[in-house]
Structures are given as structure tokens and as C-alpha cells.
Length: 418
Image (tube, rainbow, N blue to C red; front, side, top):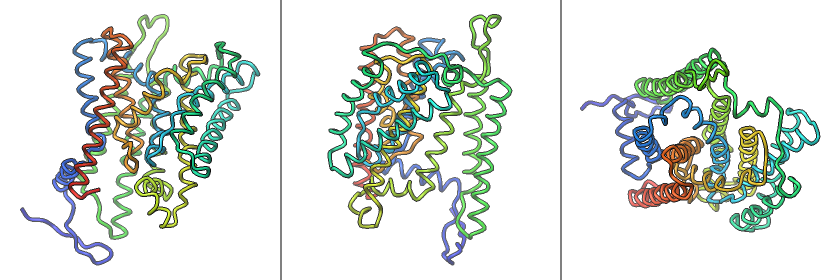
């Protein structure tokens, strides 16, 4: 097989990348232990097929839309936890932190008549303050994150009870907040948003090729770029086609069509945090500190500030998760953010491909892992399994994901790629 070469701006002659070469390199990384989200994607496909065959309602447009609204809180919290896990730390308080922030918003809306555009920022600010406090205790005082966040887990549970007057339920009536995780985008705007997203992604891909070529750098083959754009187009347009179908049981009374509002919100945060982690100096510092904290310190990276910031991001995203939970239930109660929310959120990050050992993970892992968790919870619910059986199965899936991560790291170390 002949290979073509190209010369970079530095005068270095390298092999010109090809589609076959990319696929070969990807397979080499998989064999070397760098699995990424591949196990989670395969698991998601297999689980969907199993539940779809067992219950035909699983693939119905109504149930498909429910997966997004049901999994939103876990996905948002998991996005924030990925920053914490990248440093090899843990935040056990994220669940109840989301509940506290949701309660702050609900109390302002209902008890004090504050407008949503004030109540939501206050709830988000509460999340940031919580994260900064946790981060300072961990990075500056030197208390292990497990101890600090375990104490916060108990403390926030009590704080939530205090805020809710010993356990009352506070309902919200603000239409904007309720719409966030209950309403849908009109069909026309759903299609405009979907087509615009694909067009925007294609524009960014070709702009990147043009910019790299102008600087004399090696560019990805057009075949690889076409596969990326085509894959995203199929995923986005197929999802939009399903979600724009009529989902109401009685359309004459209440039509139910369009992409749920929470979907573009998830996509916006996914794009933003992916850019932060992959394209900014801050993101490179997070990976550096997660990979080797002492080496990062000697390289001049402000390790303590990075450690504090990831907890602030984690609690900020937990606050968004809390807002979505309150929106979906139209109320807040002492169990908001409790029960299995924390375990599901950590599980989503790990199942999606984020390493518990730090230094490895992407924000997309939270979305894929959250989808796996939502599919398990939803599918087993449709099949009539009890809560206990669902916990056992989800725990087994998490154990398998952690085992795959540990084995992959061992294989990567053996192959000399880590």
C-alpha cells in the first residue's frame, strides 16, 4: 500500500492522514485500552433493543421524549461531577446541593413573589458559593474531598429540611420555570434548530480545516469530516423527526409535539463545557492537574485554584439540575436531590467513560452515561420491575463500567500509552 506525504509549516515531512489511517489509529487506541465512551454506546444500543423488543411502548415518541425530561437532572449534575472526577476527587454533596438550590429558587418564587429572572440567578449563585466553600476546605485547608463532601451531604440534607420548614412541599406556579422541563419547542422551530445545529457544526469543521491549512498544519481527511457531519446529521434529524410527532393521547384536548425545551439546554451546556475542556488553557490545566498534580504544580499551574474551581463548576451544574428537578415536579420537597440522584449522577459519569482515577473524561460522557441510566430506569419500569431490582441492575452496570475502566488503564499501562 502506498502512502502519501505532506510537508508542514515547519518543513517536516509527515504521512498525509487518510480515512483508513484514522480508522486504523482508532482501533489501535481501543486495543491499547483507550476505550472512551465505546462500551457505554454499545451498552445503550443493546439495552434499548432489549427493552424495545420486550415493550413496544419503549420506542414510542412519548416515551422517547420522557427519557430526556426524566434524565435531565442526572445529566446536568453529572456534567459538573466530571470536572471533579477529572482531578481524581469526589463530590458526595452534589445531589442535596441541587435540592438546596432548587429550594432557594422555589422559596423566592412562591413565598416572596420574586420574578424568575431573579430567582434563577440567585439559585445558581448559591450553587457557586457552595462549590467555592467546598473547594477552599479541600484545596486550602487540606481536608480530603470525601470527608468534606460527606459532611456537606448530611449538612445540606438538614439545610433543605430547615428551608422547607421541617418538610413541607412548596409548589411553584411560575410558567417560565415550569416550562423548562415540561414544555416543548414548536415544531417549526424544532426543525430550524436541528438544521441550524448541523449547518453550524459543518461550518465549524470546514473553518477549522481552512484555518489549519492556512497555517501549514496537517488537516483531517475530508472523509473523516464527512463522517462526523453525516453522523451528527443522522442523529439530530432522526431525533427531531421522532420528537415532532404527535405524542398526546388525545390531541383534540392537548397537542403534544416538538423537541422538549430541556434538550437544547443540555446541548448548549454540552457544547460550552466541551469547548472549555478541549479548547482553553483552563481545560488543559484541569487535565494536567488530574494527570499528575505535582508535575502540574512544578509546571507553574495554579493547582489550588484549579481544584477550587472544579468544585464551583460542579455545584453550579448541580444547581441547574435542581432547577430542572423543581421545574419537572412543579414543586420542591425534602427529597429533591436525595434518594438515588447522587448515585445515578456519579454512575452516569463513570458509565459514560470518565475515570474514577482522574485525568480521563469528557463532558459527553455525562450525556451518554445519563442516557444509559435513564434507559435502564425507564425500560425496567415499563417491564414492571421493582425499585429494588432496578437498583441491583444499575449497580451491576456501574460495577461493570468501573471494572472496564480499571482493566483499560492496566492495558494502557502495559502498552505504554499511559
